[in-house]
Image 1 (cartoon, rainbow, N blue to C red):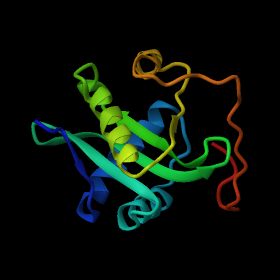
Image 2 (tube, one colour):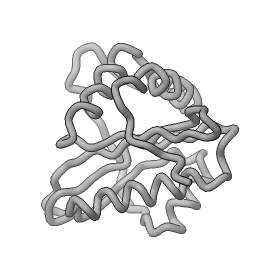
Image 3 (cartoon, helix red, strand yellow):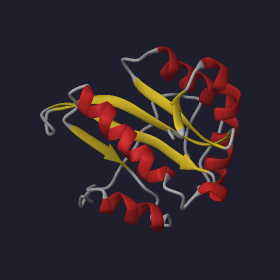
Image 4 (cartoon, helix red, strand yellow):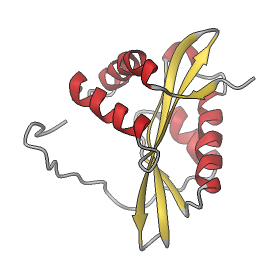
Length: 154
């Protein structure tokens, strides 16, 4: 039984609610209006990527967002698992692994050369899962400069 489906505009409110919980867990800045705009862009524009929602017994318990880029280092189109969140009550049931399989299949079908993700250091079970399915760590630091005056930090 498939526990993920592609998100539609009618899912926006529940996605934003789940995002709010995710961002709170990792102490990320959450601005609902900005989040809604970004999620709608991703749902409406398949050239940007795709977002799926995870459901368990009729309840939305998480989501997966994959976005596209281009990299000379990775020899062409690459993608990023921008966000993968499963509610704590549904963790340990294989949803994370299923999400990673969906992301990889989707990217392979579209000719993506490399799939990236980032993980918070305190998320040890997620880190172990990512290693088991073939993601490798790099000796690099992710750095960000906001180009939007409304946002100044996490």
